[in-house]
Image 1: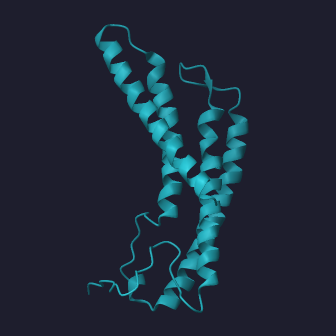
Image 2 (image 1 turned 180 degrees about the horizontal axis):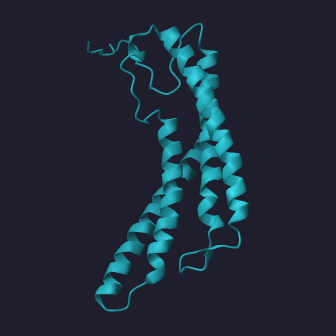
Length: 172
């Protein structure tokens, strides 16, 4: 994907996070003055779901998700890359399933209102298919990138590849 899209995604996530902070701060101040903003907490929760999915996609692109790789690190690079591709395909199948099921959930929630805000609950649930689709697109690119370099320079799908000359520490 284009760098412009990645920057836009990051800017949107930062903007939504800033709005969440402002809403929660404003709700606290207004409650202190005796005029609570009842809807602000609902909107902040709604935006948090979107920020979580956008952040998950940005972390996947940087290969920054937490992983348990104690045994995997002991494999040769080519075996590790093949295992990562297999696991990546399984995760991709899950993400695509979540995209379809999330879309169905969104359609079921079109009429439902989110708390006291008057906003359709579909706006909340639509974060699932959109977020999972973004993750699936990013993961597909990483799997294809790993497959392209499998014979010459195998690198894992999920973990950042060690830099040239860098020794990867493996603790027994």
